[in-house]
Amino acid sequence: MKLVVGLGNVGREYQNTRHNIGFMCLDRIAEAFHVQFNRKKLNGSYAEIIYQNEKVILLKPEKYMNLSGEVIAAFIRFYKISPVDLFVISDDLDMPTGKIKLKYKGSSGGHNGLKDIEKNLGTQEYKRLKIGIANNKKMDTRDYVLGKFSKDEKQIIEETLTLIPKIFMDYLDLDFDNVMNKYNKK
Image (cartoon, rainbow, N blue to C red; front, top):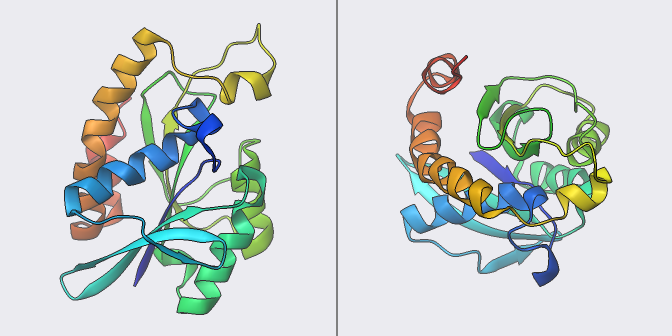
């Protein structure tokens, strides 16, 4: 069993904000597999996919970003999922808008959602897909990440979002090293 988590904040006011790119990615995966986030449990909204006889849970934590780890840890305990089978999709301020990077493990890089995951799981060893949202040093970070994409950024993000179902399929079908080699472009 695998757990694929998109990080974001719940509520209409946060829809389509930079910090909710994880939720947007999960929506694209759900669309591709014709499933909906119509199940609720343990402070999460989720959908299930059966792929090659393996259950894959798509999870949107329904607590704020900085409490995402609590929800993920609850799902991991409930379903007895190993952190090696956890795949987290989040935004990254330190990369250009739309750039993607897949990693096996690593530090939170200051991302509050990732910090909370590390705190609640006691490990940094889980797979992740980081999507660049750039950074505007002239704005307060909180205001920036909770802001909407500009028209130009939307176009770039749309191109990235069209790749997400392909990356997800490769994550399910290929060795993770191969997935990283395929999508992590210098």
